[in-house]
Length: 350
Image 1 (cartoon, helix red, strand yellow):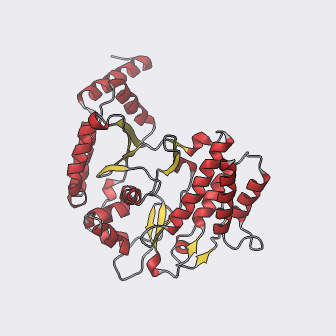
Image 2: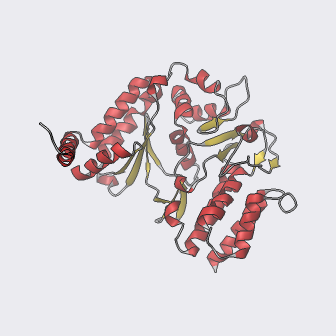
Image 3: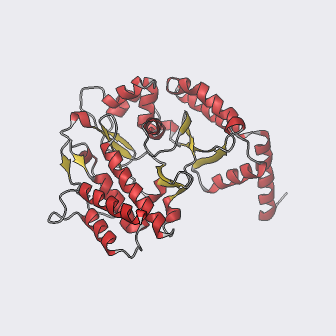
């Protein structure tokens, strides 16, 4: 029997709908978690209780919504689900992000050695460390209650859930983590990305700009003598929660984490490598200096994206000086950040 392309589409949709009707969404996440457990029991077995609790609280979407999600994944392989919790949590919106990794190349038996032998890599997560000793960040996470195998796995493949949970407890502007279940991370929905606000009213954009600069400083100063240098400080990794009026950092997969206890702590101006956007050298972050790289990226984002068309000569001049930071006008970008925050605050208060 030969079917026209139109009939084939109908058959496909009906088949998908039938599949979605017999497989509730909570079962999908349960099956994914069980699969991840088989991948590395020592990494994820301690998460079973919190994961099963979150699975049961997920409010099932309509068949149509599940169908739209299933069809969309034929064209977009990013595994991102927008969910809502039921019962006493009703109205709570979540985002479930799943990390796709090549399991054929995965070695879970020697996670620690594999991570410690990693060379400097331009993307993903890099932990600056001293040779011959266990990284202090690993001990920090183990003392926080994380299993050793889990720590090594997430640092190697998906550091976002592990770090985001810690930062949320420390009052950093990141989404709340409800659970991380193997390679699936359940976090609170933080709003739309900053790309949705590039044409918003000027007052709002200046508020967002002020918060971005404050965030760049907060990450640099870090926590427990760890400094965080983002390597993907872009508008699609930042969101604005309109309810709380806060800028939220929603992605923490690309960064360099520096142990400040083993560094000199001296401040130094970051010199970006030639090229478009943010170009960087991992060794520069791990050199032992307190770099102004986060401030550089924040100013670059404001100058080229969020505040690009603002007719404000004083503001544009400060942003340009922050980005270029020429030696005769700028010793460090930190002072430029404080000057910009002061200026933006004065507009927000007027």
